Length: 372
Ligand code: GMT
Image (cartoon, rainbow, N blue to C red; front, side):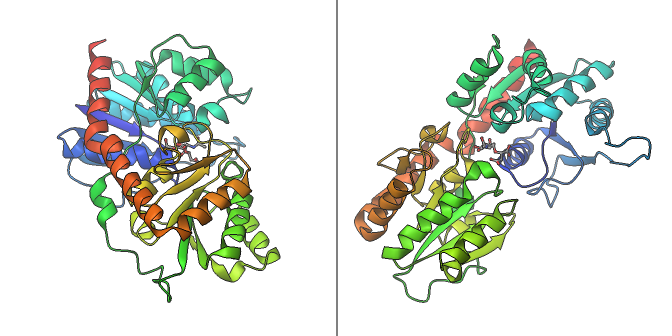
């Protein structure tokens, strides 16, 4: 098949899933064309059968805001024609899904199909904004196939958009081999082996509840010798610094910034924290599990479909930092339990979310869309 993929190129779960999916599809013999305003984060090198097409953004004095969706639709249509694409796969309803539907109207030489994957914030936060809602609903209803990354997101999409069509649940995935890498030298091994490493990776948006990350860590480090490694960047990174300073624990927090590959960092972690207010799936929790790291997270959204409470990690109500800290301290101070949870986490990630199980589900979805 010839597949066009459009997604956010910046850091974020949807872009990671789209890029990794495209690379796996190419390995399996498909031709994949990425279309975006920038090279996706995990596509620094173009593997065989993968191409990248840049949407150029120009500023015109007449237009206060550049109409990116229209430029993207034109580029998608052009690439669909020149590369004879069978299907356009948009990751995120807006603007990508909407732009792909527009491109489908422009392409005259072939009936290019549109597949849409909903990732979460396009439904729970952005898509539900009054100014986007009609476009989001139209996009979901008119795509040739729609997938969602969890059962939670399926239920939420039906609840919020009252859509009648099929929404196929296809979980996010990991490549187990990536999680067998050597630890990254940018995080030195703890000087004393007893010191524990707590990790959080995100784009530091309010939905990630960075204050809770710091509050939980403050409680952990009051009773367990530990350090916190924060990976990523975003608007609330400053909150982490300020709170760390206020609580007198800033010297125990290390800020790594945005990285391309998280597996070598996770190889240094003893525990992963994800206290988000919502999470349609929690790809980063899955990546931690794949590295054998137990997860302490909010009992919200699609997270319980990924993290098994009491087996691969612990879940607590959103904002319950006391419960999260006490689960963490318990695990960190009971070596046997910690080891058992880590092994169960890795086994669960491999058994249920290996890309070799998930990518064929996308292929099947494409085939069904092409035959529809
Ligand atoms: O969570 C983010 O801030 C990024 C966001 C995105 O759109 O890239 O992540 C969403 O998609 C990921 C991949 O499917 C999911 O693992 C995340 O749970 C989801 N984020 C939220 O629902 C908040």
